[in-house]
Length: 148
Image 1 (cartoon, rainbow, N blue to C red):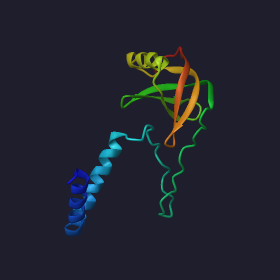
Image 2 (cartoon, rainbow, N blue to C red):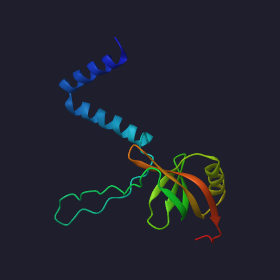
Image 3 (cartoon, rainbow, N blue to C red):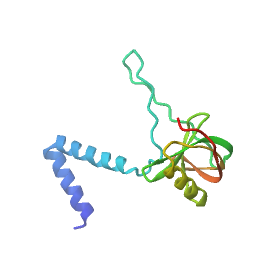
């Protein structure tokens, strides 16, 4: 018997005898997958507060740029988040996970060696995968700045 069939039969038996335990187990698995970051390269932005009527607010997903959109001289900063480098645009605080290349390697070294966030002016190209935007940095110039 294959492992998948064995797990399926176990899950069915657990659901019949202890539905609460089955739901808790599923929640733990989903939480683990979510924390692993599978398919979730961007950190979710905090949603708007609930309206006073007590009904939950409808969350609007952040706007996505189209695949191939060219970014020219965009200012912002880079952050290292869970082994990935994220560019945060200064103008609208939109976040893009940066795709690995030699430019990003230089940026990551510079960001890791500075105790405060640096401002950058970048150019590159937007990509899209599974509903999320990424940026391929083609040019990056660190801007002189002072610590906060």
